[in-house]
Image 1: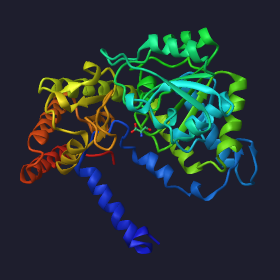
Image 2 (image 1 turned 135 degrees about the vertical axis):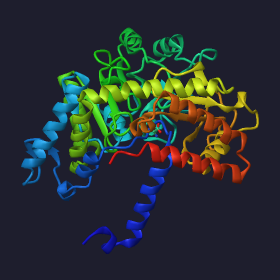
Image 3 (image 1 turned 90 degrees about the vertical axis):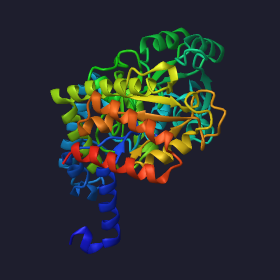
Length: 413
Ligand code: DSN
């Protein structure tokens, strides 16, 4: 029985969502459009089975093909990042992070990270998150002037608190991360270095960002952002003992049965990322981000840190219009068919549900095939949306223009 026959309510909503994705431009920096091959694996019969444990060490019978699939995913992950060990079971980036914490720290241990408001992630010690409830976070800062990581602040915090772990890797940071410098500070105080490369994993694989290896002791990532796989997490490391601790932390520490259909989809996506075309894609993601950033700056927008070196940028809307908030901008963009998210800028005076910024990224539009000139066009559309944000008729007209761009650049099929 097809989904439409079995449950037309859900089938209709999925069709509508498909249409929404086809007819809008996705500028959320953490999203992408996966291949039909990835989607096929994620929607396969592998969802039917428990495979608790690891390859060749399961707690259920009938796992032979699952062992092969997970082993392929592990080998491809190791190959992609040039490291010795990979755990492909985390259900998400947040559970990968918590597992990594459990592998390196005991409850109550101190770690330092960048806070959420400055571009970190909620699983890096936000007060309501398990990372703060069960471990002890403190935060280093961005340089107030350059809005880059302030390594004096990292070093000072590290020497003051002697943390068990230093965490780098961010959700809204548009610059290259100097992993070697972080490792140097970690070594000075005997801390582990953890790199959460969820946003830039694809850039690392595609050679557009330095690798966290050999500097980081443990590396976590999601698999669905620039890496263009199914929604999920991944943990990587080079040390045998740490790998054992990671494996114990993921299962049975934090999770039960792995999502084997998602692990198969990860394997497919990793296979795609190992192909030469993926490198071309990633280089284009970065070129497109540069073109979008330049297009916005020449139209009077200020970008946090003055630009981008990766796939994303944080637009501080106040320079263009002191009254314009991130919430209002993101809503107007959605009405015009451009999907983005409001985002706090460093030291944002506005609350997190209002903000003074929007975060934009180019992984998804690059998958659709847009190039630099198209991104400049998108910057122009962005600017017109902001200027017409209180004019519903104008937003409808722009929506039609965006739909036309989407028709010219279809999603992968
Ligand atoms: N929530 C993700 C993002 O949008 O950056 C990070 O996991």
